[in-house]
Image (cartoon, rainbow, N blue to C red; front, side, top):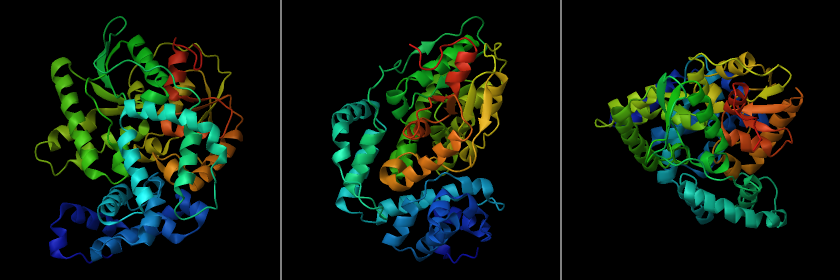
Length: 437
């Protein structure tokens, strides 16, 4: 794609990167076939190729984004299926992230939308605040049916979004998990030492996931540390266009991980929420222009591994499963498209006695996408229903996924138990059955 940035514009490292990305695009349109919003809506501007044109024009003209540009960028899930499909290697992720930063900086949203986004950016990365908000949501859930849904619109109303938030909130909250600063000793001879990302929303909604990971790892001789003063990875605010907040969180995490590595050594930083893993693995890029943090950011990205990625490299205990449980494996977008991890979770489940079923249209997003199912609930629900129907076609006993957002989203449309991959692996090698007390 031909670009027309001035030399002055290209002096900006972000514009220079955008120019490189744009020039890689050859207009082939392969991305349209795997883009969830294009598949649903059939609008060229709701495809990666269409959004690339919009972003190109916005950046080249260096003008504030229009409402039309914002509408189509907001509809993007950042599922990154287009990057898996693209034969030219267009890094759409870094381009759309840059567009979101520009929109947040230069576009004036309606007051109610600004307030909602500000609340999400403040509450979701802070577990204490998020837990309190979930208690409030429990009080509001009985009244959710009274809120109007309204007709599908380019920008859903505030009441529609509040209704979506209430629908996503759990009926009860589990007790909190272990606090930061806790170290879990390896059972038997120590074979390694890792930091386990505590997460923000996940530690409130499903602390059982990291509990299963700790059980699994320590049983296999891995010492696990929950690093003190660790923060949200920054993914939530990053995708809302709050660039400064995301970078501040990245730097804070790099500092505490570096300190932990210097004091006790770390073989890896393990992540059980693939949305977080994708962003942490991108810290090196995000802080590439920061002379103080760039080397440490690159090191943190290199240490970051999805839990299944790490387990694939160690010898596991014999499985106790007999192969009679049929598991539908949901490939989270952030895992299959963002991190390119496609085989490890399924291979681990199969080797440990589960009958793994691929889900039709597995490349399509479930509609969760961080805060997307709150900000774009109508599109998100259509994608969820499509995903649930595809899962139902394989008639599973359980559904396995590697991302808490996907788990909550899918569970909202099915009665089949939805569990994390690590919960099944822990159970197979001597841990608790998912759902048991």
